[in-house]
Image (cartoon, rainbow, N blue to C red; front, side):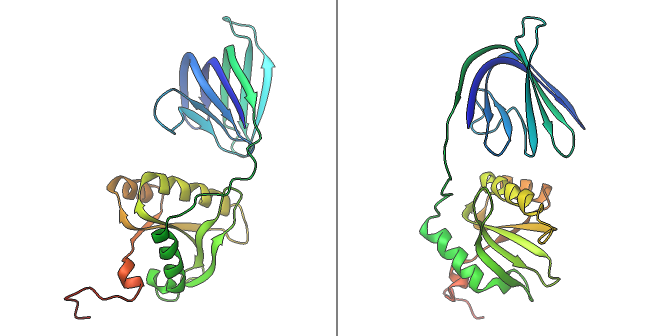
Amino acid sequence: MRLVIARCSVDYAGKLTAHLPMALRLVLIKADGSVSVHADDRAYKPLNWMNPPCTLREEPYEENGAIARWTVTHGKSGERLILTVNEIVHDSSHELGLDPGLVKDGVEAHLQELLAEHITTLGDGWSLIRREYPTAIGPVDILCRDSDQATVAVEIKRRGEIDGVEQLTRYLELLNRDPHLAPVRGIFAAQEIRPQARVLATDRGIGCVTLDYDALRGIEHEGTLF
């Protein structure tokens, strides 16, 4: 990963246009080719970014005090992220190695195991392809097929937050590049799903399922007749 702290302006040219005026920002250039521009707030969310596949071209640029222009071009859409750099304060590269991925707590791991065992909880005629289906950015909790034999990726959380929806979105982007799997739709499954996460999932065409841990384990609640 390359970390650059630079005084720069940023312009996005594509279906929409956006401009960030000159300011000191952090630019992350990851091994997967993605480029994101961050301010010193907003937690993890970048001000602007370009997902892979994309290419970065750096060239000298002397205008209005600038020293360089960086152009990030998306390999499929042709959309561009243009950084006009006036000053570079820090520029370093670091080899992070293969990430082991998120380690789930006991409840999430057991939910995954139970749902894989009882995959028809999601619908009649559903079948399991694999638990922990590997991708370049980590394993998908469950990959399965619905009753129409369409591929479905399931992300499981104990508590469903926006971060989980974002994680599933990244998995779906990768899985849909595989012609043997595409089209792949997503289901966000959790014991509790926050309203904001549900809204974001719905907006992205991702289904939401609330899981009953006890029911998956075959435990009836007191007072339940059926």
